[in-house]
Length: 149
Ligand SMILES: [Zn+2]
Image 1 (cartoon, protein in one colour):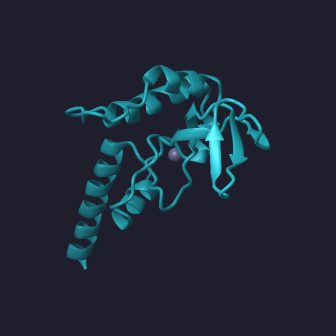
Image 2: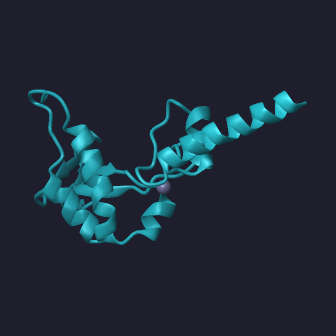
């Protein structure tokens, strides 16, 4: 009986140490243990299995015209096509990122959110650049975050 009590006390102390060292709530530690293959919120460290990421657009399509060619295919163009009925589609996001969950995003101000976006952007830019690959521009991300997206 005494041995079980000692084991429990030692285990609790070790666990408390781990939690204190990580400065994260037990909930997120368990969550990551249960879902090791999921990415996490940069702030609360909960996995994308358990929380929804807040999607922030940082690149937009720009306004486009959509029209139908005589053979029935859809065509997209930045300029209004002549002699073909077309509709203007307002700019829509073409690139998104989500370093924070909806809850954390809502608790932080735009400038408090920036370090989490910067950390993810730096993570994307680690290692050697792949020739021909398009990389996200930090200035576009920073502008979008500060605009409250
Ligand atoms: Zn979070």
